[in-house]
Length: 299
Image (cartoon, rainbow, N blue to C red):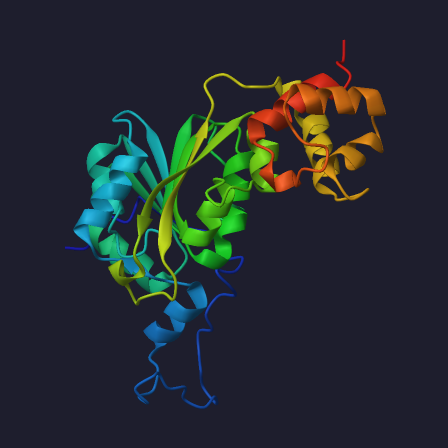
């Protein structure tokens, strides 16, 4: 008796998050071989094009799920459900799961396993091409490295997102979370509304096929209380962008191009930021304090 397919959706594929969609036919093209010299299969090509590296380690899966802290009554969107390693746990722990997968072979496999499960909806399509839900939700995913920025941006722009727990390249997560002692423009610009945290590291040996670099669990949490009013978002983002522009050769010089020098210098001294400080070494909390001291308040 066939499975009930009522909880599966198809979306027009706008290209895979990790690259263009795999071609449906290789007719007329020479066979490509893998490291062993054997011809690469369609599965091998799909994994390469879509950036697929699957989790097989139960301990790592458990570590990711603990980082998610899924709410029993919550809604979770899973990016790149793959072979269902995280999906199985999410379905067991959450009220509703919407699982996105762009690879048609994996969608069929997921449908076979979860087709009769009531609290999951499978979506065959590109996650970032889908509109965010109108209710609070969290995002979880073992995502392709090449799609990281697009997926993170989608999360940051979704009004009802509560958190995102994403498996990313280790270097990306460390940079975004200030783990090198430096902070990125994107992190500083979103810090008043989101907290970025490195929640764990995953050795590359825990994936199949094994990637070239280690991974990390990146956690994004929407703050329960904003550090700045939402009405100041655009002004704050422009303030930080000016500081990161490098115009004038230092943070102080960059800010003086728009704001009174005395006000800038006083704010830098009050927040213990050297005028010649490298912008990446200024902590997000210091950026917020500088903005509040330097940018004129709108009444």
